[in-house]
Image 1 (cartoon, one colour):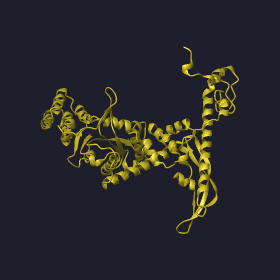
Image 2: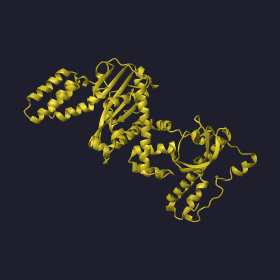
Image 3: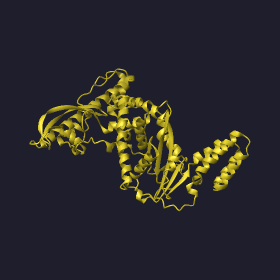
Image 4: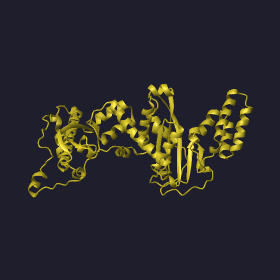
Length: 475
């Protein structure tokens, strides 16, 4: 390796080392795959699989593109036709070429959740040995999103067939829903207009204290989609059933802003709806400008006197002289009248609640506005971002899994690229007594040959080989 002369070129030197390490890793992986292919060739049934030569293929990894050769075989299928097959591809559970490793897919997916596709492609290209374009990053998200969509739809079908059941048992389940308007582009814009509401739902079984005043929602699941209310509720139930044993749920609390699509979830008496406190209080602040009126409305709400609250707001709307103020009060009355069953929060209704699981507490609902921003808004809204229906849905699925710490596990389940068990075994190589004196304590650093920088400016680099542990430094 040629070391640059100037100490300020350490960045260049670091990049060179990194690239060489990636090159070494590609060679190791190539050798492992080709050795595996040789093993499969020797163990195959020669009477069935005929060796027809080797073909090249490529796998994209975090170290860069790994090109290797594997044997192609032919065999006669049940119809008597000659079929071509790669035993190595079958053993790895893959098809075709130009594949991408699960680790690289995960890196790209996480980067796309943090910023634009262009920025994600740039950051992945800079931090790995693989160069990708923003189009490739977009394609990864679409492929992964399609796989997640298939899993969610299967979960929805399982719930309808009463066969879906997760592992977590919860007697009380908290659900919160809201929507966010996103700008559309292309054909989606022509079909649906300039914007469309994306629905978001979260569910959790309580909260866990993480700090003096900080609580974290426990076992949270989330799903988001542009689809209609009926389809979205089926999807939401499938996502819930993937984590929770729905047969054990005795009671549900539903928090929302009162939208019709949210209240369609109220299908029986076990579901208790409450109007989201943020939207309820925002409506009061927006439509009631008089502080005395506002104070009286809040008092009636606190006293749970809903009938007199509606009478009071209606009387105010009929008594004020200002036309705008009258319309605002009438709007508030209509909003509260449509959601009067949810004006009293669930925790103040005197309901008999089941005992919470160990380490979990029941807290007041109202986390939806924060989740709308942290899950969807922070990435998908603003910055002149526009979406197609499918593109927005696919990214939203990744964002939901990322927010609930389920993205890595889901990506692992969607990829089938695995190496044989022997490459996962820990190999411990011992030294013979004759080699101990030559390798231990003699400054052997694993390299056959190295060139020390000739200039005094690299004295610090030469000293890296003589660093001592902290325990050996003099005080």
